[in-house]
Amino acid sequence: MFCYGYIRIVVFLPFQSQIFHFFSVFVCLQGSDNELKAEKEGVSDSESKVDSGVPEVPVPPDDTPEVLNKALSGLSSRWKNWWVRGILTLAMISFFFFIIYLGPMVLMMIVLCVQIKCFQEIITIGYSVYHSYDLPWFRTLSWYFLLCVNYFFYGETVTDYFFTLVQREEPLRILSKYHRFISFALYLTGFCMFVLSLVKKHYRLQFYMFGWTHVTLLIVVTQSHLIIHNLFEGMIWFIVPISCVICNDIMAYMFGFFFGRTPLIKSPKGCCKTWEGFIGGFFSTIVFGIMLSYVMAGYRYFVCPVEFNNDSNSFQVDCEPSELFQLQDYFLPSMLESVTGWTTVRLYPFQIHSIALSSFASIVGPFGGFFASGFKRAFKIKDFANTIPGHGGIMDRFDCQYLMATFVNVYIASFIRGPNPTKVIQQLLALRPDQQLYIFNSLKAHLTEKGLLPALEEAAAA
View 1 (tube, rainbow, N blue to C red):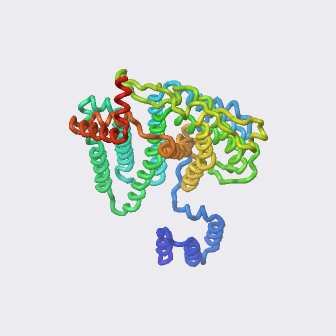
View 2: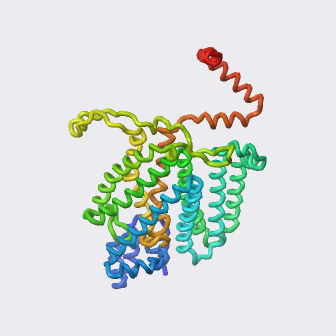
View 3: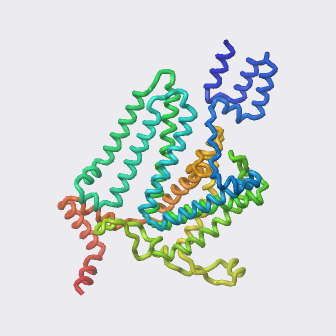
């Protein structure tokens, strides 16, 4: 009994070294040859031993359509998986083109649906692992916090991009004015509900799940909201990054499948991500990003910011393209000039930026997938769900997309976006008349001091 209690203490001390842990178990169980053998096997597979206290999530059944199962029945499991993934990949790419055709509003709704599905998949894993404890209100609180966070983020977006519409409607104006206070009050309500739901003997587990929910919100909801922000900057900032991640995923799989020899990281699906796939995917994605950017940069529908037209109460994508989307001549370095024989090359400036986007999608983006792979290995699961045959769940396909969306948002804020006069004017119009007059006089004095106002007046008079 003493020995059993000692083992329990060691297991629940997360900062004890694994060497001390194994030594303690060895001393306590030295009288049993079979258990000694099991312990030696545990030492040789430390990962299995560390995770031995984590319940396994039930493996979902094979959901491959019966038509594909019959058509591919004569193939080995490796080639069958290859064909299933390929066919479903083409179907998803076709659907992606279709929703782009439907416009930005449909894209935003799809992003919201994907976000909810990814949240559901991760929360379901937590529930599957710990459901035997019958934690009260766990699922209810998880979805309530999702509602609160979405209310906060989408409320901020509506206020920012639909300012005139919000100011025109009295209920919306009140909600906008007190939006952050309402959001905080909603969150506090959920926080108090969580405290009231605490059950004796399960405190630690409940706080684990509280953290589980909030980390899921941070990973899924926050980053999916950044995708919508990127979309408002122009659909090209939405399509090119997502397409680069898709291209890198496909080409890395193809190069790894046919030429992979050197393991890069072990995947829970049983195959290794290889250096050959990683490098082949990198160069393929760079070329793909440059070519796709060249095609899309010539269309206003893709390059113009998505704006809300107050007169027609609808979205519009029409503008005079900025310099970023106008062809310019670039001088080639002498080394490239000697190889190609060209002195200059004509490119869109956005193509230069696409190299940075595709490089991130190829080098850093896969680490989102490695992170997801580690998460799945921790709970001994193959996929987050079985929503898409051959691919797993929605989260299995968006693990890299969320990381990419965050990078694009930071990249735009750091290198692309400047002050927006339209938003400044919208904010000025919301001020009181005396505040507007004060700003007018201050701006007039500033322009006069700079010597710009007389010249402007003369130009207006002429």
